[in-house]
Image 1 (cartoon, rainbow, N blue to C red):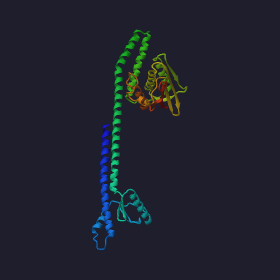
Image 2: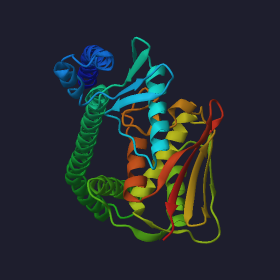
Image 3: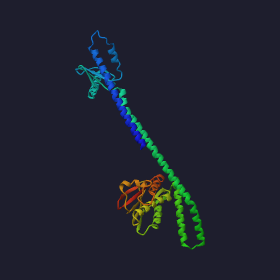
Length: 369
């Protein structure tokens, strides 16, 4: 904001100073034309004995101000410094008369007796009049480039924070997970028939999957052709075991396989995140519909809920880091989902539709394998 304010002040000051300078030079040129017109009048009215050396010097001294001298009958008697291209003498006279009319319409005319001396701004004055606008464009371009550099720098810094946080999280999870894995094996050998140990083993494997996901956030994962139906079924199976009976999860998948290039572990994370947000939006009561299909060269996935909905003005804001409607939460889930879908899978994620009090539908689009 400070940079923009300084740029605006520079442009405003430049415009004011330039306009004052152009006004002063314009007045100076008018005085010069008045002297030139008087010299022309002296030349036309002088007798044979008059000394016209000074008059001729004044007339020849005008090298840059366009002038047209018109007699009382409207005929052109003299013109100087006009840049006119013509094909014939008649065409030349017509163009000079048009220039004189334009000068007269702009109020740039000096009357000397019955004659009129029409004039226009010199080339230097016209260039000076345009200069502040060129300068303004350059300053605005500089400001735009500076702002772009700030945005790119900020985004790069955010990416470094993402990578650092993800790598550190995966690293910190690694040691306790390894320890838990060892203890589960000890328990399995000590109590081979205990069903709780099997459930503990599943939870430990889940932690291993989470650590793997965090480690892949920091670097571009490898994509492999996967059946999207299998991935969505795994997510639905996982969510059904972790939501209350008051939440009805419906899976609508086509019979044919949907083969897309995926990093399955990361993409499951995206869909799980959308389902968990749906459960929170419904406050633990409602229905979630997880569906998929294909259109032309793309595959789509939709997560529809019957929650409280999202205001239209927040359709894009929900994917920004820090945006959340929960009392507890960092607002990073959908931001991570957008990064995984768009940067890692080359797809698109957006709010397809939402109505307050009725529910929301998120849509993901991916390219086919």
